[in-house]
Amino acid sequence: MKLRLLILATLFAASFSALAQTLPRPAEFYFDADSHATKPIVVVNETGEAAMARLLATIQRDPHANAEAAQLGHMAMEAGRIEVGQALYQRALSGLGSGNTLWRAAKWNYAWDLYRSGDREAALTQWVELVTARNITGSWMPQTLAMALWSVDRKDEAVQWYAAAVRSEPDQWRGTSRYDELLPDWRDDERATLAEVQAAWQANPPSWP
Figure 1 (cartoon, rainbow, N blue to C red):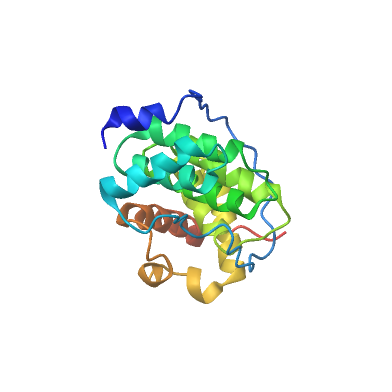
Figure 2 (cartoon, helix red, strand yellow; figure 1 turned 135 degrees about the vertical axis):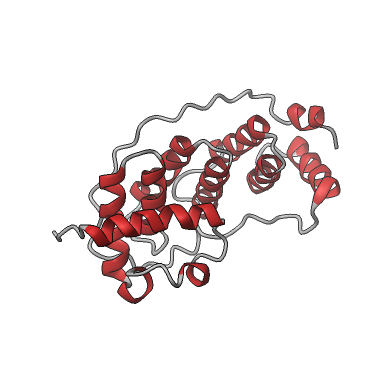
């Protein structure tokens, strides 16, 4: 499938602008699984052009094909078609309310795709919306936000969030030796960024509360 066919699926021409996000103070502990968020969106199990063609056909037929739009958005961004992927994610999210379980998964996946495309501020925007949308203290939140905040030079906040990870699971996050086990889907550079936060936390652990 050619790039122009993907662009035809984004007739709404969504624009995206990441704003600086104000985070709430970290909670004391983060134990919730938040399993509705931390999962890939998979409607079509195939990969490559055949899968993209199937997803696009469904999206063109059905204006409510939000899961299909999110999966195709992920595939587009993974392939380097960033603007197309953003537009597809925006289409999916515009059809979902924050109470919809798919909304959380779409936000979480979109944030990772934005982060890995180099748009760290925009990724942080998506993650902050997940944190503030519902009263959930997801176990993924402290270390992910610590990494994201450090990446956009909000280092004091990053250390505060890393401290929440250590409070929650000290045996996991006090050191860096288990990062490969605990963060198998993270890339090497992402784990390296988190290790920088850990070093800053270790040098000057913030008090609680």
